[in-house]
Image (cartoon, rainbow, N blue to C red; front, top):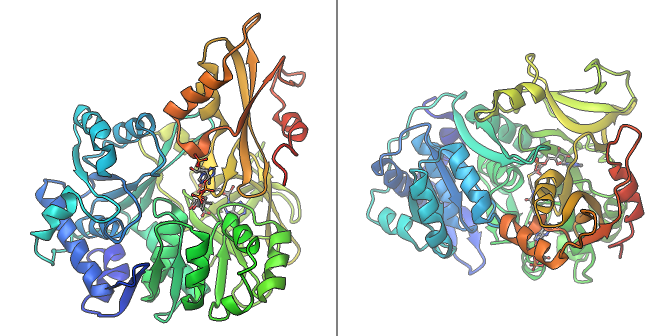
Length: 504
Ligand code: MLC
Ligand code: AMP
């Protein structure tokens, strides 16, 4: 095939007047209309001089045009690099520079800031606003509604998604066409998606869950999306009766359960609720079934691998487990010290191998080698076990990571900012339980001798440097950090001390 990702997810819908996007204003965008928009954008990008393999960095609000930009990149053989809308200019500078993006597409509100950064780094700039206006679509409007799809191989790169790391430096995970396509086709089959499916889409489209799982799976099956700009409880409740499926992070489900309008009747048309990106409490699973009669299907994935495991569509969806490895995915539990496989039932690090596993981190061969073994197994950094029935359980993390409302936060990134502030000797950032976000960020700060750092000024520095979702909910000043005999900070003690700080 000439371009597997584009042909199999998008091209197959050419000429179809079937609905693809149901917008909240009642407008419906058909598959064919969507393809025309994508082709027009592909023409703009190609005429700008972009060549296959070039990176297109996009920090844009969720809109049909933003999704069409993804399709356009696939069609033109460009590497799509979606970026969280919460990222600050400082964070964006790093992503643009590190990826060597040829063009930056942003909201007009950030244009003034980003234009100079893009210029400095040799990238072009175009705007795309939430309502579809901006320089990108102005040019697209004058373009032909067809585009000669650029030939690509399954091994060619389709997307970069940046994930933070334990050292505080983000890494660009390189995903190939085959990584994305194999996973979308497997999931569509495993979860029985068809052209009749209407997925309620309230996730952001700059991460794996909203873009490569929810969107690609629906595209692979030829279904449609109720396309919401974001998770808004009222809107989700209003449109639930039209949906056949919902994919969300656990916060979606706890928010739904906290509302009395969310009833058994409201979910009558839905055939599948999927949860992932963070652990779903067994308690939420049980409450959800009591309220609606539906058993949430929990699956496990990550940026580097797309989806690895899933509870069964037919069969027992077990609370507190992430189900079985997907067809074609191998999963093993190994000893973190030796890398040797552990006996069934023992807790160790989770490693996965399969067509879903990424190609490595962009221009970071050492980091790639540290996590992606030569034999193709990827060391996920998650700790888990496989029970006697073959279900995978995630029991913890071997990486210093906080997951807040489905967003990953690496403490090191925040600690580096805090440590840099006047009067600060050192800091430790931890995740503590939070009723809405699952976990939230707490910063513990140690002053230099006879100094008293200004905590408000420190929060301001964090605001300048980092996206809002990474900000500590609170900073606490302590005399010293708990350490073990080796001098290593014992974050488990801090987590235990402050575990009830934000409890409901
Ligand atoms: C928003 N805020 C967050 C936050 N989201 N803070 C911490 N964690 C988050 N996840 C900030 C807001 O900016 C706001 O700041 C304040 O917290 C409260 O906002 P809110 O209105 O309550 O939040 P809301 O906008 O409703 O967003 C919450 C959310 C959203 C859960 C709906 O975060 C979301 O859609 N999360 C999904 C993330 C996701 O797609 N993850 C998948 C990654 S892929 P202020 O200033 O007003 O206080 C992956 C692989 C896999 O992990 O397996 O899927
Ligand atoms: P990200 O790097 O944003 O893609 O996040 C991936 C991480 O999210 C994984 O390594 C897990 O730690 C976590 N994760 C994803 N799905 C689940 C799940 N169902 N249960 C527990 N953790 C999960």
